[in-house]
Image (cartoon, rainbow, N blue to C red):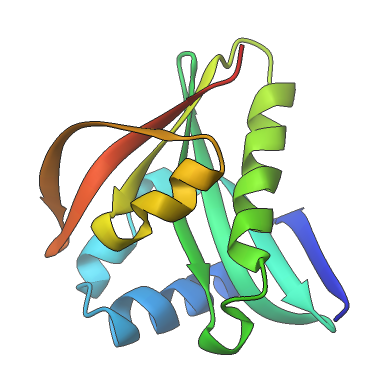
Length: 141
């Protein structure tokens, strides 16, 4: 494997990955998958042998880095790439002045995955694009 995770301006590659995972696989409406936050977000692109295989975005608001739109194509799942994407996003958040916590909305089946990376679930279960989620936070201080 020749994997890399980089901050990217190639939003089309990120959108294509997100479309595959969220819209086609999970049935998220296209109108809900993309939003105005994409324009201000920091986008991460994971590649393997220079082919896009995963993506995530970070939106900075006040003292919080909101990690979202985390996706990995089926052939790359189970390889640790998802954890690598989260760790890359957390690393960027830690390096950003004034950011004291990372937050994300986890699909319920993925809570254990994020807990292994140090996140803690809080608050009630809520519906996001027809999928049950729960908020999670990681203190960066």
